[in-house]
Image 1 (cartoon, rainbow, N blue to C red):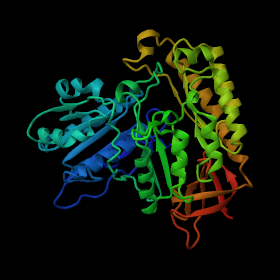
Image 2 (image 1 turned 135 degrees about the vertical axis):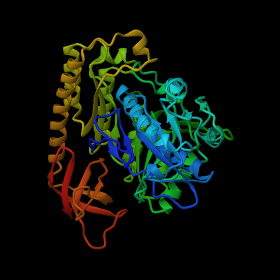
Image 3 (image 1 turned 180 degrees about the horizontal axis):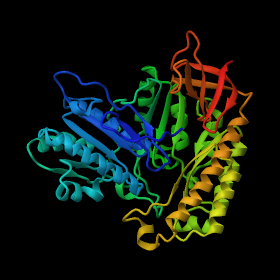
Image 4 (image 1 turned 45 degrees about the vertical axis):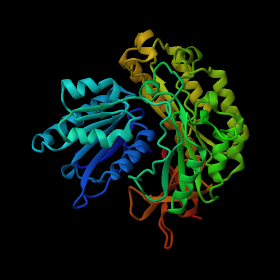
Length: 476
């Protein structure tokens, strides 16, 4: 579920500007006497949040501890997202707020990490002088050198992209640790050149981690009490690794199986999938192992084949529907969610209706929905006029949201009377008398607490009511 929120100096948030809303994460702890402290805010996708955990590990090795209080920090970092213009506006406002703090604390250093680094480095470093260092997503290992030079008075930048960097040997610091769920980054970059997307330019080409390092990280998390891992990548289905010693090939289905075999009590999720790479082998692997969650995020973006071609999605409406049919055949109990863009370049009213129809046909459990936002440097920005008026984009988006909300409610109401295995994650945000956790289909379930049950436990929950976002139940 997504919650509207605005970042403040007192709170640390991960803002998902690629989706409709924002999610609150506590990304750090109180200050530790005698150490330097860093404060970090993450904006965008789960990959950015995972990157912040890698950064925290690197900073820990040079004597920095995390703090939730920006006033106590010696170093402020913003991990940025460039997927929408609004994200850049939000980051600029935050930098202006930090500039006020910095006036009274000249030794305080401010840095920008991640996807905005390359495009806006000159503006923020030289023109507005809002930051002391700018670091791209493949240059986090250089942070100790960059911070040292910044402390000596320099303004530092490293935005070089790499064809090899995966940070496989770095053990992330679990900043938002509920001790139950965790992310594992299995690959970096993207080779898909979707015409609307900046990711290939900000994160570079695809490269996959050694599968044994992924399995070792999952094993370590399980031994520390975690009971769910999410394998992350811009396009996890295109994961591939060839063993240099014996030539053995490992694809994503193989990696899924290897991770599932860590322990049957360790749930495995993954995100995000691309329709062109979602194979039946992956689906059969999911069906084989109970602890691989029966949930797939399969972005459609548009339901019209002409628009999909302009988007360079490399599939058409029929291909997407074929993949959905395979999911229904092999995983009949699976839930599917999606990403949807309204008002892409030259989209007509009839083509918008195609998107509405594929949403209804696909019967998504939920979706991330947003209007098209032209990003500088992308193929769409170079070739296609952003010619759909904003009021039309917003009206179409509202129609998409209304339809999806109704589908989500209907989906959840169909679960009334069913009993699900739920992993207890935390207290409910609305009542300390309730726990919440997700079922295999990634639906949040809320249910009353019971003596002896704690986060990390699996419980059976029978559903008696539902909203469009939540299942309400009782222990079975």
